[in-house]
Amino acid sequence: MDTEPIALAQALASFEALWSPRVVAHVNDYDVRVAKVEGEHVWHVHDHTDEFFLVLDGELRISLREAGGERTVVLPKGSVFTVPRGTEHRPSAPSGAAILMFEPTGTLSVGDRHEEVPGHVDATTGHALGG
Amino acid sequence: MDTEPIALAQALASFEALWSPRVVAHVNDYDVRVAKVEGEHVWHVHDHTDEFFLVLDGELRISLREAGGERTVVLPKGSVFTVPRGTEHRPSAPSGAAILMFEPTGTLSVGDRHEEVPGHVDATTGHALGG
Image 1 (cartoon, rainbow over the protein chains, first blue to last red):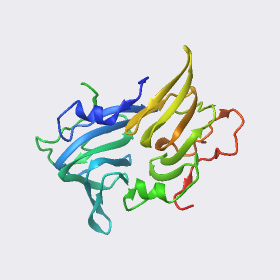
Image 2 (spheres, rainbow over the protein chains, first blue to last red):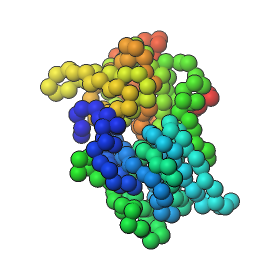
Image 3 (spheres, each protein chain N blue to C red):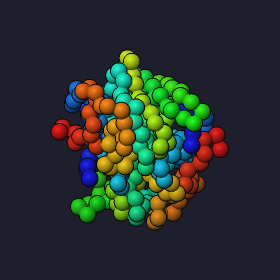
C-alpha cells in the first residue's frame, strides 16, 4: 500500500509510452491506472468487468458496439464514463489525452477478446509507476 | 448503468451540501462518488474496505491514526491517496475542496465505527445525482 499521496501530473510526467497504463493506486482488489493516449486503441471486450474512465486532460472518445448499433461517446476533460461489461468498445483520442481508469487488478488492457493488437498498443495488466 | 458521459464540474454544480457524496458512476459493485467538503469530517474507520480519494479542486487533508502514531497527509488538487481498511482517519479541508471517491457500493460515509457525527456531516451511502 502506498503511504504517501501521488500527484497525477507527476505520475504522468514519469513516462512517455502511449496506451500503456501505469498503476497509481490500489483499492482492495482494484487498480487505479493512468495512461497517456493518442490515436486509436483496438476494439475489445471485458467479459467480466465494467471499466471506468475519467479524462484528466484532452478529450477521449469511446466507440461502443451496442445492441442498437454503434455509437461514440465523447468525454471532454473532467468527465467520466463506465463501459459496461460485455460491451465491445474502442477508445480513441485524435488529439491526445490523459486518462484515469478503475478496474479489477489483473484486467488486461485489451480485454478478454480483441482484434489484432497493433504495435502501438500495449497489452498489459498495468505497469508499476517508475517501472 | 449511465449511458452518457457525466461532466464532474456539472455534477458538482448541481448541489450545495458539504460532506454529502453524490454517486456519479457505478463500476461493478463499486461507486464513484463526488463530494464538496470544507472544515472537518469525523474520525471513522472502514473495517472491510480501502477508500480511494482523488482531489478535483482545492486541497484535502487526511489525518490517519496508524500503528506508529498520528499523521496528516496533504493532497493538493490532482493527487490521489488510498486509506487502507482498518485505519482510523479524518478528512478535512480548511479552505474547501471537491473530491472524488471510489469505494464499494453501500460503504457508509462515516464508516463502521466513528465518533459522534456532528450536524454538518451527512451519514450516507451516497445520494443519487439530482437527488
